[in-house]
Length: 105
Length: 410
Ligand SMILES: Cc1cc2nc3c(=O)[nH]c(=O)nc-3n(C[C@H](O)[C@H](O)[C@H](O)COP(=O)(O)OP(=O)(O)OC[C@H]3O[C@@H](n4cnc5c(N)ncnc54)[C@H](O)[C@@H]3O)c2cc1C
Image (tube, rainbow over all chains, first blue to last red; front, top):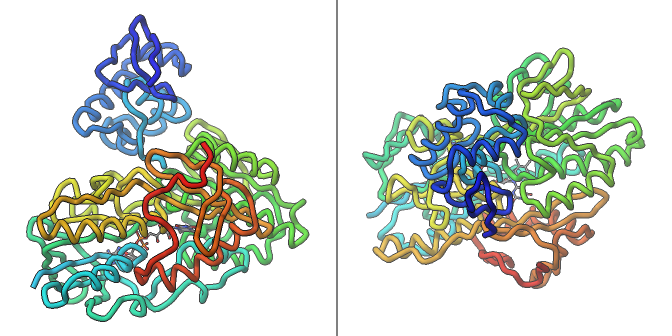
């Protein structure tokens, strides 16, 4: 796996730039990846979703699908698309330092 | 007497009972299979119905003809699975069936009601679908007299069965309208939530090029929020709008409600299993096969077939307390119709994405992989014969269960 430096830390990433090890993640890394994804400032609502996804990953061992985030985090789909434009589930997984959601094959 | 109960007599369930009835001693094992309907559908054939290539009769046969002697077949809806009591409740006579081992093969179905605005006065008028037999037949009728205009094919959300079928639909539509001398009056668009034409990068690029060549537009990353059926447009969560004259929808698929009701499913009612053995992650005597299972590969008949082979081999060891040594590798193998009598073949698994090359199929092939050719089209047409005559009956098919790298270029 290739490595790269994000927010001053060298971490392993996959071909699509997802962190390989969720434990490498820091809030600074999240902020930098968010900027790469075109999100300048992470608001409280962004953090609510990111934290939900990290907790869910910890409990279940996989990144939640969009459907699951909507159902469980209390943030509706429409809002998720404004917070994380284009593919929210994939984008938030990358920012939260988790693997790509597998629901999409 | 030990009891094996199989829920759903579709592709996976039918293959499994055929294989296991031959392998398990009838003195020791009772095998029962339950399904709600009397007819078996060859679902891949739905694709050809809108264009008049197949009719209803080409894709349905009596289910019983495919269930071997020595297997009990019960026609009923399954109401609930009670895994803690090792029994299943049927709708018919409120009857209970108990089991020692359970195989869930209840498939996965499109849920049109999940797309707001889809089902309403325009349903089966300017809004159609082809993932059910009724839908495919209604669309055939509609297309016969359609004047032309903007045909938009929308994939609402994943998962869906056979993720190449929407592309094939567009390729066939392009061919069909050419044949009718109407192509110049028809605009074809694919609006998909994916970043490109398909789920796997190399195949996506290739299929994307082919769509462009055939003048089929792609709107990627289109996540539908609703349909405005009156104004004839679809609207995405981020406010994009696409106007249509004819909308063909492929909606998100979910497992049957019985899975949710029984507490056995994930968010889309698919059953979580070990991706190599297909054993439930919750119960040591429940397996899920085919579209019903939550595994990271395509939902396809070829997958159901490969899984059934692996499962059978493992099950014969498992019941004797031995370790399950056969491992399902995610192998999927799809013929893709590209129109004008040609087709592609793609072959991939959990780890290897579709690669170009040649697929060695003794006696029939070689079929070219990821390349368009007439022989691949014939492969798909022949597949219907193989499905009814070999595959469902659990006979040897000239295809290997594990993906082979023979003939592939990396
Ligand atoms: C348009 C289209 C094109 C396709 N093209 C291809 C292709 O080219 N290649 C390919 O490999 N695959 C293709 N497929 C996919 C393929 O048909 C399926 O993946 C395959 O049939 C899955 O088999 P299964 O046994 O898991 O489910 P199914 O064959 O769907 O069987 C499920 C069975 O369970 C029964 N059932 C469900 N719930 C209940 C209940 N509560 N009570 C009683 N019975 C119940 C149903 O009646 C059904 O008979 C296509 C599918 C479609 C729709």
